Structures are given as C-alpha cells and as structure tokens.
Length: 354
Image (cartoon, rainbow, N blue to C red; front, side, top):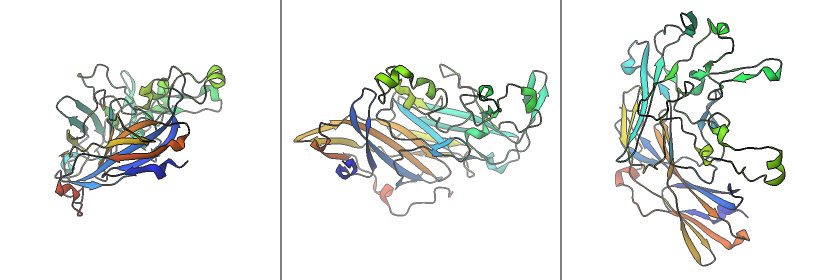
C-alpha cells in the first residue's frame, strides 16, 4: 500500500509520509511537514521549499549537514546552524566568535563557538596544546574543524576515537604524535547558564549523527536476547532522546513556536544576521472509515542554512495504522494560519544581498 497516494498537503508546507514501527511495536504512518523560508540579510522573508529527507545528508567531511527526518517522535525542539564563519568586517584577526541565538517569550537557545586561524599542535607547559593562531580565514562550521578524531591501527582492538566527534582534530592516545600537525579551529564557548557544560568536542552547530555520543548511548541494548525476543522493535531501554540531534545549547525541552527572534553572528560576510519568521502551524488529520482524527504535533526541528539563506522548520505526527492498512483512506496536512502577502511574493530576494 502506497501511503503517499493518500497523503495531501493543503497548505504551504511540504509533506511526506512513510510507514514504520514505533518503539512500542505498533505500525504507524510517520507524516512530516516542512516549512522553508528564504531570508535576506535585511531579514526579509519569502516562502521557499525544501524536501523532507528520510536519510542523513553528509557534509562531505565526515559529519552531517541535514539529519534524517524519519522518526515517529522527537521531544522538544532541536536547532542547528550550518554555514561558513567569516572574520568580522574582513578584518585581519586571529580569532573571532560565531553564534546562534533563538529567543522567544518562554524559551531561549544560544550557542557560541570561537573560530581560530590556522594553528598547529605544540609542546606546552601543560602538555601538547594548540599553538598560536595565524590570521583567521573563512572556516566551514563542520565537526571536522572541531576537537575530536580517531586512531586506526592494523589491529582492530587498538582502534580508539573521541566518541562525541570522531572526525575532528586533536584526539590521540599519544599526544606527542600530534606536534606539528594541524589543530582544531573551532572551540565551544562555555555557557554558565547551561546545567551541564558542552563537551569539548561539540565545537560546532551541526546535527549530531545517530552513531556519535551521546545519541548512540541512548539507543538501547541490541543483544542476543533482544534479537530473539523483540527485534525489529526498539529495545525496552530505548530512550526517545536518541532521536534528538542538537548539540548542547540548541535543544529546548519546551517546543518552540517558529516565530522567535533569530540572531546569527560571525557567519555572514555582511555582518550579523537578524530575522523573525511568521507563525505558521500545520495541522495533521487522518481519516479511517468515517472517523476523522486530529493528531498532536509540535515544532521539533529548526535548520538554519546560512550558506543558502534558507531556514527550515519541521513538524511530525505518528498515525496508528489500522488493520488492514487500507482502512486508512486519507492523511491531510493543512493549516488555519495565513502567511503575510509579502512572504508569498514570487520575487525571492537574494538571501546574501545587503
């Protein structure tokens, strides 16, 4: 049964549906709705369209640019920023800040990262450390430029990695071997407002892949007992927080609304990027026989693509499939909200224009 033939989007959101099994073993139809906006440097907003992605999209350097959206539930709201950090005003500096803040009436998310110019590891008074930085250059905000890494040897048992970021730089069981090699250029800035400080390896804003810590530690126990008695249903000790991919500082347990104030710094040649989006909330409905049901949802992901000037917002609903599935005759995504006329203008401004 092709569920996509029974799924209609009657609003400005892009919608996609896929059957799966939830963590309790139920057959469900996962429906994801995505709103995307093109945002200019001046904060002008126009409607745009981006696909719903069932698979992770890599960043080309070992990390993830776009996370998979195929999951039946995600607690709270995750946010991510990808782009390239630029020295402020084109000045010759050795380091500068890049940051993302999302501020609403009840919720505030924020994360800052120090961006350094090229530097190498040197021997210091406290061991091997990153040496003085040269003049900062445009730097992609990807995990490969943050602290981390892995070591591979002929013997598999000698493999070692920084589990929070195995593609970064600086991790080694033999620190002296790092001397003279390139050091990481992104360092997380401690935030005293956070109950627990970000890990040293989380010097980036991008989504955490599913097989990196801490996500992989929340997936549950996949042992022989699970394989014999429960597979393919999630283990009983599966933690739904595994589906959350935001780095510390960019996850809110209280869902955001989407109309908060955004500020992105150090990531645009033109300067600080400030904007707000219109509030627009999709509604998910299913029809089984003559029964129409509205399903709970909330904004669970925000992706800020500073390179392309696009902001994506995603909602989801998990619809319990009947037996047989054919009794489900319609999945409908619609909205009671309207978008301002200027947001719907055909002329989309150049998102990087001044």
